[in-house]
Image (cartoon, rainbow, N blue to C red; front, side, top):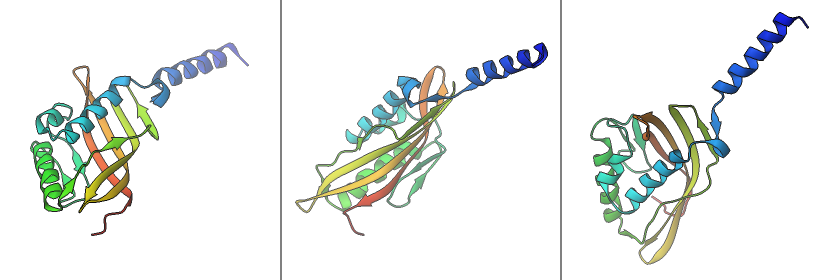
Length: 162
């Protein structure tokens, strides 16, 4: 192997290592802290706290109740309102969202995606119910802080029938 080939090979390895995304084991812990803050805000019904961890104008919030998708400057407030309305409409009580260990976490210096198994246990008419889902988050780093730009809750199993 010529010296030139070794130099280019070494440069390619160095560039690959420097540009490699962070996987779950070495990702910035602030990514999951941001996601946990969003879940805590939802569980405490705090639209203000939820807005604090989202971008100013989220690309999308997707969930399993109508209208199913929210976006833009009012997305977070409208989603929080609509979530409370559906919980009230169906008389869902004793509810909470819980995340599990991320199934997938991929991050660069300024963007991250996390796919996280989640559960939503609750009571409906005095009977325990549950929803399992994969919760997908896409985050942007803005002014040194991670902010959620996309949040999608996709049911994989539920005991609540329409």
